[in-house]
Structure formats: C-alpha cells, structure tokens
Length: 471
Image (tube, rainbow, N blue to C red; front, side):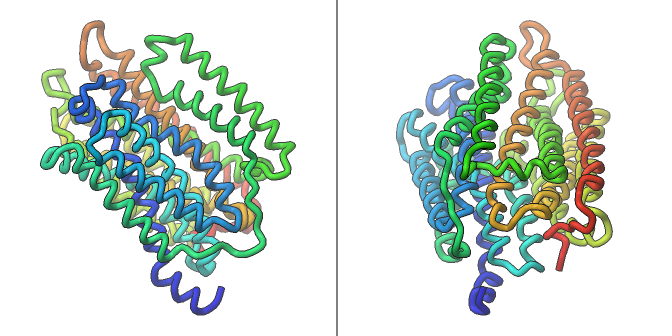
C-alpha cells in the first residue's frame, strides 16, 4: 500500500465501512417495527406482513457465504458496489406505491445487503495498517448488530408522523448514501487472488439454510404444523450434510472448512451460535413485553416509537462496549474478553427475569444487553482472525455471520415458543411467568456461552493475539 493509499484510507475508509455496515443493519431491522402497519396498509394478515422481516433475514443468511467467497477475489470492490445497488433498487420498490408483492420483493433485495459485513472486514484487513485494521474490524462487527436499535425508533417515529412509506424512504436515503460512500472509498483488493464460486455448493447451502431458518424462525409451525416443521429440520440436515461433504472435496470451496479444524475457530463459532440465542431472545422479549397492554396484568402498552426508544440504550452502550475491547485486550486474553461480554448479557437476562415491573428497568436491561453485545461482537473477530489467513478473512467471517444468524433465529423462535406455551387457551397474551421462563432459558444458554468462551483460551495457540487489540 502506497503512502497515498494510506492517507486516503486513513481519512475515509473506516468511516465509509462503518457507515455501510450500520446502514445494512438499519435497513434489515426496518421490517420488525412496521409489521402491524404493513398489515393494515396493504390489507394482508400479520403472518403475511411478518415476511417483510423474515424474507430479508433468509436472503441475508444465504447471500453471506456467497458474497464472502466473492470477496476473497479480485472483484471485491465490484461485488460491494453491485450488492449495494441491489439494495438501493429494493429500497425504491419499498417506497413506490405498488402492491404488497412488490414491497416484499423490495425487502428481499434489501436482504442481500446483510451479507456485506464480512467483505467490509476483508477490506479493512487488507487496506489498513496492522495497528488499525483490528479495531476497525471489531467496530464493523459491533455496527452490524447495534444498528438494529437505530432502525427501530426512527422507523416508528416516521411511521407515526408521516406514514409507512416515509419509514421505508429512510431506507432508500441511507442506502443511496452508502452506495456513494462505497463508490468513493472502497479500494481494489490486492492482486493475485482467485474467487471461483462453487455454484452447486452454494445451492446446497442456500437450500439447507432456507429450510433450517424457516423451521426455527416460524415458531407457529411447531404449534400448528409440527410434522412440517420436523420435515424442514430433517431436510435441512440432509442438505447441509451434503454441502459439507461437497466442500471437503471441492477445489474452490464456498467456505474453507479446514479452518474449522482449528480449535480456536471452531470454538469461536460454537460460542457465537450459543451467544446469538441468548442475545436475540432477550431483545425480542423486552420489545414484546413493553408493548403488552397493562390490562394483561403486566407490560406498559407503549407504542412503536417508545418501544423503539427502549432500544436506544442497546445501540449506544453497544458502541461503548465495542470501544472498550481494545484496552481490555491489552490486559486480558481474548477469550476472557469474549466471556466478559457474554457475562454482561447473562446479567441482563437475570435482571429481566427477576425485575421488570417498571419501564425504566427495561431501559436498564437493554443498556446492559447492549454493553455485553458490544464487547462480545467486537471480541469475536479477533478469536477467528488470529488464526485465519488474510486472504480468507471475508470467507471466515461470512461463516461466522451465518452462524450468528442461525443463533438469532433460534433465540427468536425459543422465545416465541416459550411464550406461546405460556398463553392460556383463548387468551391473547401469555402469562407473565412465560417471560420469566424464557429469560431463564436464555440465561442458561449464556451461562454455557461464558464457560465455552473461557475454554477458547486453552484452544488458542500461545501468543495469538487479536488484531483488534494491537496498536
């Protein structure tokens, strides 16, 4: 990298990458607070409106490993720009006065952007000095999660003030800005890399992930059509086993599964899966709890905007937690930092299980959750990239992002199923005890996460330090 390149990246690259990661997270989260408004505006059922959230998450999970592999090659810049262009086109469809099917198509296109974060991490690792690349990658990991809390209140406010299309208009504005920022700042990757994509492998992985995520994200399937839900899980298992077998024999695998033979990498992905369950379970529990009317015997009956404000501490303290990781790495082992983040999430789950009778406690729980998620997310890339070749950064992190998506979906489904089981026959809302049970389930998952994270210290080769903590 020339001195001129270093100056340019120092000035613009990190802000542009973080802004882009934040944007795709915000756009991906636009579906959640708008589901009721979509159902009313388009005259569709809540189940149909739910697909404006489910569809982009599915597409993002499928697109992530494909984009991650493309990002290891010589056309990474073109892939980033083309993907953002697809997201912008999808944003146009969500704003245009078209029928519900076109809105859903737009949300599907927006979901492709959720696979960009690993590519942005690869850009940071290739084009920033070693003293800065790790902290930038950690910040990207944090932004890709805490951006969820940014989108909720903005979408709720715009919907209340100017209607549904205004909320989606926010997505169009920020994605267009992200495309411009990427066009101006993302450099070409180093020469000499190949990016062959295993198309059959991508099809197997996509089909397997689709079946798996459908089964675990649509919790109603398990109560209404359990046979279909079980069939989806079985089909997912067959497809994913077939994908693993193909990847092991493929000359240009979609994901280099040999990396998973490294205990540190395999363990980090297992920790991400378990941690994702607890994190997203609590996120969904709190947002649902505060919107429950007091007539149910609990809850606060707040509107979409106030429910979104509850997530502001999550985002704010998430970024604070991400910034704490760098000095923490100077004092503690990476596994200990990862466990500390998981411990904060565990504490938030325990707090919500024991004390949630006042609205301010929900703000406190979300702040503590955000702090833990920020530390956890910022520490995670270090555990993986310390033993990953630079050229495989996008591919390795894309696999971790897929694992995170699966964990989030399991957490969401676990919360939904627990609350459904706690809902008396004929009742609209679950019993308050259902929230307690779901919280303790999440706490159990996070307890295992913390213990597993601490074992990574033994799995990591001596002297391996995270890029995030150096410099």
